[in-house]
Length: 235
Image 1 (cartoon, one colour):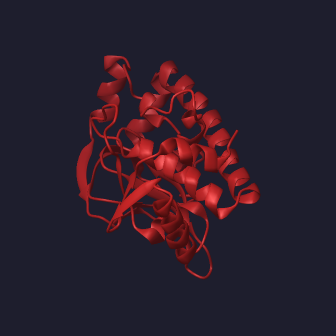
Image 2: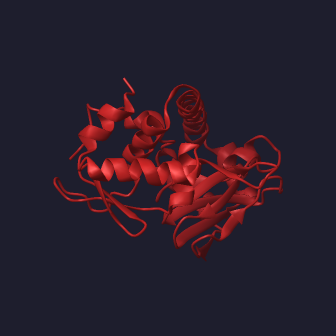
Image 3: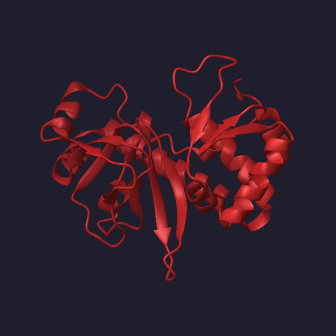
């Protein structure tokens, strides 16, 4: 089912896929003049926190996790970038090093656009500038929601909310009534929800017993998104 009107999904997605939509031909030509395509295997690192950026990445197909690593080596996933989204542009805009790391959650096809071409297109396109400003403002709101989630919600509420968001990201050729399979390991899900793996396993078992979802190995099939929305208690 669609969750439109039931849950404010836009408050949890960066929506960077809108940046390149219907740009003038000249802008597209500048951006793509030296682009290259890369296939990343599951778990392959795209860039690491603290390194200098050489360009931006467009997710042509697949999913990328953006994450931070603490002093003990533990990951905290900040965001899951989906097909059609851009990653890596924050460091270029701020003229600094990458503030986080990125790695493929599954086999992912990326298009790399060199830094020089991205900046050239940005300098020559008022449309691109305006869209980026709007996007950065929106991303700040999304990240603020995430901080609030960790500070104020129980593990059960956090996991329910993340499953709602992931369900939307894993929709492929979706039709009403179709099951949506979330293909994510429990360690990554725990990192995303900001809790321990054993807590994720426990809460998933509770959701399964309540008929909210099914599991098939690492795959999670949400059966009752309405119940997740109630548990998330976001509004």
